Structures are given as structure tokens and as C-alpha cells.
Length: 545
Image (cartoon, rainbow, N blue to C red; front, side, top):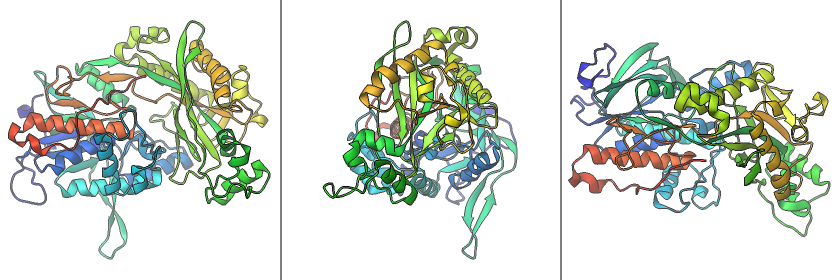
């Protein structure tokens, strides 16, 4: 399985020219698995140095075509396991709120570099000054296409529809991967200025050789974890969180956060949403409060949620004001949901994950650990998603329960269920029976004794709980050396980003991708060239629950 022993008619040639030139490409080739923030920022950093050829392998479709896969899921309930809300160019964050908040320092050099790079590729300049910047899906689509174009112009490659299913490791050194490549389409301009579509490859298995491999898959790439496990790569269980997605009418959140006097001043420029807000406050905006306000958001957290035996952390996560709930499943028969919003945040709903922490040695995982070892958390997530799918009655319908009924372990009367933004349909169900009792206990304790005190009115009949939200972060970490950033025991493999267990969001994943790029430059280039590479300082982006 070594680099010099690979034999395949589909092997990417070491003599492949770049930029259309005829000279062999002698630059180190770096295979980057995944076109999320970590993978893309790593690739751009390597390509911009002019000294590497990054080759990005993305299992999903280009962002402009990925929308078609999502449309087929929403309208026909057809799920493409490789192109959906979780997989495809930009990663899971593309069809989300596009939050750019981070725990690693809002004004640190690496974070500023990431934000400025996003602006360079089309993000609005306001993200440089906002306290809680976000992009929205609509901005991310344009931005990602610009990144792709620039990456290729600098000699980088990006292959869509390329699902890595094998790692070539010999004597502790990785030198290539196999990828199952499926037909992929990119929107192109025709000779007459119109738009066409180009098929770039046929169904096949290809072997890609490289001097190093960056593992930048997202946390939903479960098949990759299993292949790593079977290949002898060291993995460890890490903490994660699971729960539900809670949805309120946005006008209620406006009142909770701004009060009755100011809540009526929220203005989105969407007639139906603004009319609903005005009707809720039952009066014209007061002349004593000129101006308008943005839609209100919230953040809730406690470390003192009693589960019956001890305390757990419970918190809101990825809160989407003016947003909608979407399916983030990657396989049929499993249901996982997420929240998203466009840049205007102008829907009539507000949603957020409401999740409880699960530690690596958690008693609720004991039976999973006995069978699955370090992949116990992953299998637990899958079981919860299967329960949710079954409770929803199939067809990707989401099981739901009024929050007031959830805390009382009572199935909601179907006629009492509030409207939902989830477009694939909902079904009243016993959401209180999905998770093990300790997790349910902690959620209820947090809702009643903490969150409804922090935001009076949070616990109400209009709040609708949707099941389930399980993929807040990876339950597995790929061990890596703290200095070289190479995988433990595997030379030239560089785990990076959220899926590998080293980031928690768009910005921290991008920063981690830059750190890995710098480690690769240090490893493959002589010291006298190291001064060229100071686009990011080494920072800690480790992320855990």
C-alpha cells in the first residue's frame, strides 16, 4: 500500500502539469479531504505560497449544484448520502446561519485573518466590526464559488463527488487515498454568455497519491471514522452534546429580549414577518422610540442541570433568529435536524438547539463502549437518530412536542401543535422517551429552573420541540502531535477542523486549517523559506464540551 507501489490506471499522475504548463509538477502534492472551512483555508494557504499543489477531495457537489440535492430532499424526500445539508462544498455550515463567533479570541490575529479573507471573497465588510457576525446561506454560496475559482487559478485542484474510502498507509506513513468518484456538475458559462453544466467525471474508483494528507472531513463523515479505526489510526472518544431543536415565534423572542415597549420596533423588511410582529404587540410603534431594531437572539446555559445523580451542562446552541429548521441527515432511516437562516433573518420563527452534555466516560454510553470502543458516542448518536426517524413516522418527518408537554411527559394533542418551519412535516410524538432518563432529567431541570428564569416566557405552549439534534460536534478525536500536528503514529497525516475534533465552528475550523498548512510548510520546506509563512500564528483551537 506504499506510495511507490500503488498500481492503478486511475492514479493521479505525478507528472500532471499545473496552470496548463508542460513542465512536470515537482511541488509537494497535499491531498485535502473535505472542502469545509478547515480544508479550504488550508488549501488556499498552501496554494498562495506557490510552493505546493493542494488537491481537495470533496464527497459532495459544488455549492451551486448542492442546492439541487437539497431541493430534492425537501420536495421529494430523496436524500443523497453525499450531497445534502451536511455534505458538499463549504461543509455543514453552508446551509446554516453562517455564524462567525468563536471562543478563540474575537480580535486575535488568526481570527482577523480569517474574517478579512472572507471579506476578500465576498463576505460583507460588516463582519469585521459586528459583535456577533454572521453570513447567512445566501452570502456563503457566492463566497465559496469565488474561493474555488481563486484556488484553481493558483494551481490548486478541487475534485467534487470524490468520497474517500481507503487510506494508503505503509510502515506508519500515509502516501495516498482511494476515492469513489461519482458524476459531478459545475455551472459554467457557455460561449454565448448563457449558463451550462459540465460533467467532470464518470462513476469510478480512483487512487490519489500525495506527499501528505490533511483529514478535514466534517463531523458527519462517519464512514471515514470507521475507515480510520480499521486502518489503525489512533482515535479517542471526546465529549459532545445531544438534544432537540426548539422553535418559538420570533415575535415572542423579540418581547422576551426587548420588552413590550421595544419589541414592536423590530423590522425585517419582510411584510409577513413585520405584520406578525406588529400584530403580536397590538399597537403601532411608539413615537417615543424612533428607529428600528434587529430580530432578537438569545443564548442560554447552565452547568447545574440535575440529571437525578449529578449535574450536567445544558445550553442553547447555534441559535437562528428569523430562521428555519432543516434536516441534516446523511442516511435514510436516520433523522437529525439543524437550524439555518439567510442573511436577512426575516422568517417568523426563531430556533435553537437545546442540548445536554455527554462525557466520554458517561454511564449512558457504557453498553456502547463495550461494543464500539472509541466510536461509542458515534453509535449512540445513530441510535438516537433512528429513534427520531421512527417516531416521526418515516419520510423525514420530525417528531415534535410542545415544550410544556415535554416537561410533563405528555404527548401533545395534534391540534394543539403550533405551526413549524420544518418543511418535511411534523408528527406529535413522545419526544421525552427518545433519550436516556438522565439526559431527559437534565433538560427538564434546566428548562424549568434556569432558562425560564433567565428568559421569562421561554417555557410556553407556543414553543415547539423538534427531534433530534445530535451533531453539535464530533464525538471522536483523531489524536495528533501537539507540535507537528501530525496524527499520532502516522507520518504525513494531518487531522484538522471540527470533524477531527479540533474546532467548533466556521472560524475556529478555518484557523485550524491555517495552522495545519503552516505545519506542512515547516515540514516540507527548508528553514530559510519559513519566513514566508506568517499568515497565522499558532493558537489553541481545541474545542470540547
